[in-house]
Length: 230
Ligand SMILES: [Zn+2]
Image (cartoon, rainbow, N blue to C red; front, side, top):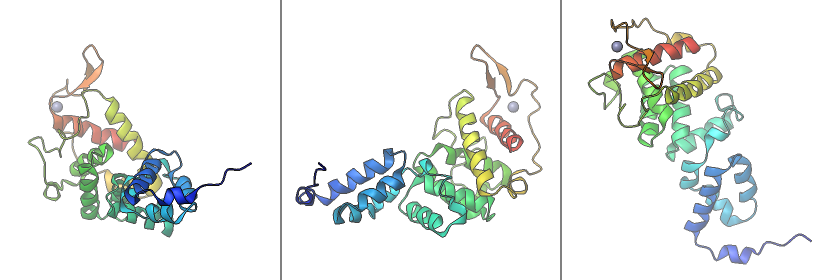
């Protein structure tokens, strides 16, 4: 026999606790929108909690993308905008990609990347450096270091190539999905590889990773690696 839910007990829980329960659920779920939809139909309290800014901030949008096809549906865009306004880093990152690679609005895209980067979004920092190299838009950035690289010390990319490859794979997939036709014109510029050191970027050392003579060389190499994969 199906057990009846005792809603009077749920009604005794503090609202903050219910919001936290919903936020935990949607941040860890493999299908956060399905779970949110089911949960908010169970009681008025869960329905109200599902609308809370904390839930929008923490919902795991990366588990749903690209199944919701954000770029072509009004519903997808309204979800993205609402989540970005609540401070959801993934929503800011995806909207940044749409602004940079589809709308070609670099300034808005960079502002959204900054918001995502402040929340520790690794791919947003990766893309910030790529955009800086492509457009030479240092004036749009607030924290360019002496290598001309944005905030590279703020998130540790490590000395190996793995983090770069993971970021590159995700960014390439998203750009292809968002704007298959425009990416080439937007990203590939006439930038020249500036380093004259023939050893720079070669695979060396006991761990067989690429060694660069500076952080700027590392990112310059990464810029061309990304262009090649697209
Ligand atoms: Zn170099």
